[in-house]
Length: 125
Image 1: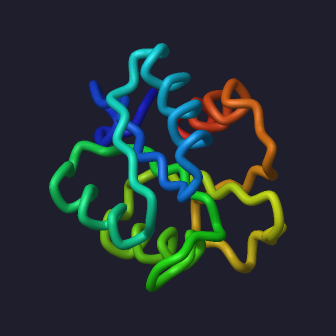
Image 2 (image 1 turned 90 degrees about the vertical axis):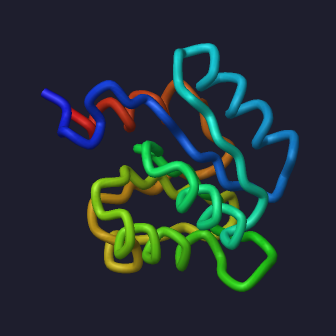
């Protein structure tokens, strides 16, 4: 059974400074019935989350320009929006559980969006 935060809400925020990756992942989740939001930086992601409290999943890249990277963003999200599912991805920076916020999962790039969807389903079960 899904948590109350996720009931009726299949929404995801994709945070990546690479437009082609962001668009490809957004298209994948849109095709599977998600409401999809996009951000190219951590600062933009926080603004999107503040305006859209129904977002239930955040998929963020680690390496991004701006005031914070994706790992710091994940910690901020865990503090401000605790029920949000967090998927942290990187092609350059492998992360261990000790570095990540609670209830977050790490996936190495390149990744198959179907695997990410499986992890989201697993985390939200």
